[in-house]
Image (cartoon, rainbow, N blue to C red; front, side, top):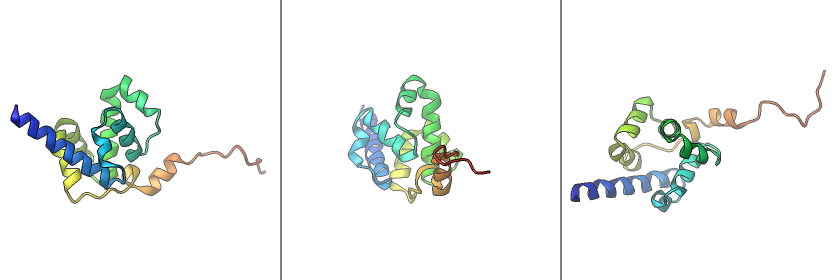
Length: 126
């Protein structure tokens, strides 16, 4: 039981540091539901994704883990680690040399993904 408690403490401290690296309050990691909301802000997804995370947690949880690893400059292998061994990989993000690069890990890709493709307010030009 002591071992499980120590793992839990390591995850909390690592997650706290990870949130702080991303420019969010570290204490938010320990608040249920609010931590998912903040995680979605970190990875650049809209607030309504919170509903999707509750109805399809396996699919959207893995997707969010992938975007989290990309946001810290890591690859898909790190995503697998976040999903299967979060008690190791969350502290790696928090205490390691990983830097928060912004949502998706690429500011240009994030801007392209969130910028509307059509501007309906402008009149059509011929």
